[in-house]
Length: 173
Image 1 (cartoon, rainbow, N blue to C red):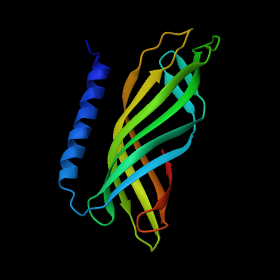
Image 2: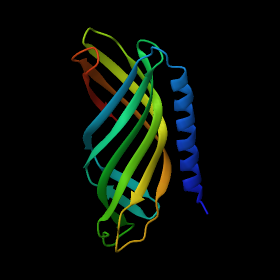
Image 3: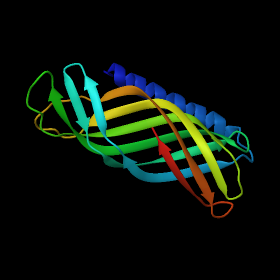
């Protein structure tokens, strides 16, 4: 018996895979970029109905597949994961919770627009998808996974070392 969040997640993943497979059948001589990455994700605060959840900074990692639609425009699918912890502070007063350990998983479909400047290619990105918050083994609090809509935008630059190898630096929100 699937919950609503599991059904939405499965539908989005299935739809994304179908779109990617259909798109790749039409790719004949178009550019395909594969990117693995690691970085740092700044924490923050989630304002909830009965308190605040303060999330710690943590390392993130993932990958991207980009398919060239033109020489400067790409369709991208990306996955990012971050393992972190947070502390819940109830309203109006109360004791903070023990640390809550969880992973943040983001799956996005979007686009990238770049400008060629020799070996440099500045770019901007926009992506839409879902965030899946998955609790780890929390002995003190029983929490279920949660899936929510998410959006990201970013900018950066690609440094092409050869025709087939480059470095991508990017900042995203």
